[in-house]
Image 1 (spheres, rainbow, N blue to C red):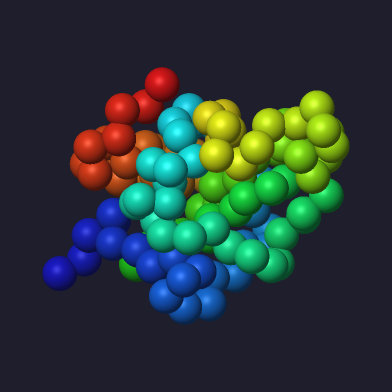
Image 2: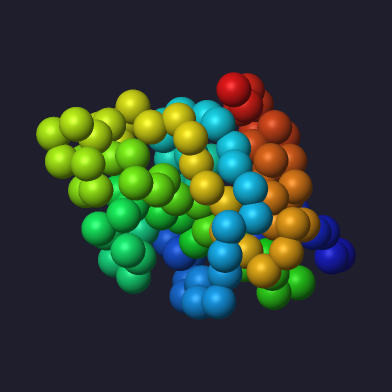
Length: 114
């Protein structure tokens, strides 16, 4: 049965995150994202401006990305936050629906959004 919240992550298969752009923000811990979506992606993202990224493909083909932007060690050097201390996350996609879906998945998994 179709469920708009069914998804896979980059840990489970290929997710093409090209042509996605900022749709909004969430605030939660790095560990919450690891607990819900698994380990972050280790390649295929802008490691100069971001320190962590998750790519998610929903059953209907919509794609979402979760990433930090210009606040971690990769961009700010010693002044930047460690990954485990990041709490502001950008949500990318091709429409606003992915932002709502990511929020709902986190809430359904018991994550308290800040």
